[in-house]
Image 1 (cartoon, rainbow, N blue to C red):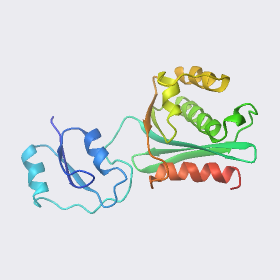
Image 2 (cartoon, rainbow, N blue to C red):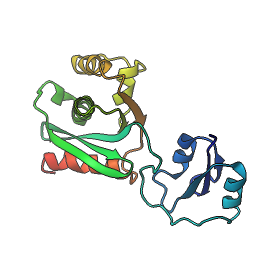
Image 3 (cartoon, rainbow, N blue to C red):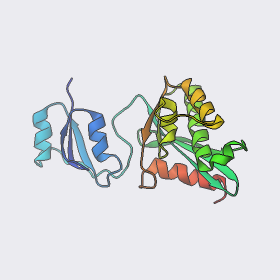
Image 4 (tube, rainbow, N blue to C red):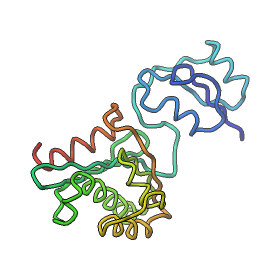
Length: 199
C-alpha cells in the first residue's frame, strides 16, 4: 500500500513518498510536524492546514517502526588514554549504552579515533549477541569509509578494524552525522566517552 509522508514543519516541507526522505527533513528538527497518510489527497489536505493537528515533535529519533536499531558511537582522548562509548535507540527510546577506557597502547596513537573504532566494534558485537541489525551513526568519516574501502586502511589499527567489521556487514550499516549539533544520541555517546576518562 502506498504511503505519503506530509511534512508541515521541517527542513523542507511537502509530501514525500518514502520514510527516508521524510526522516531527513524532521530528524533533529525542533518543532517538526509530520504525519503519514494512505493517499496523496489526505497528505495535501494536511499541508493546507486540514486534518488532525499533531503536537510538535522535539525528539530526534524516528517514530516509524524500523528493522534496524540506531546506534550512536563516539570516542574521546586525554593524557595518553582513549575511551569509547555507544548508545542504542529503538524508535526514540534509549535501550542500552556502554562505555569504557581503551587498553591498546598502539591504538592510543590515533587519539580519539581509537575510541571511535572501538565503539563501532563493540556496538557490532552487541548487535550480534542480541540478534539485532543496527545503523551506526558516527561523526568521524573513517568509521564507514575504512569499511567500504573509500578510505585506504594504511596502518595496523585501521586494517584490523576493516577486517573485523567485514564479519558484521550483514547486520551493520552506517550513517554519517554532524558532531555536536544537538542530536541526542550523538551528544550522549560523546558525554559517556568523556565521563569514562573523567573529563
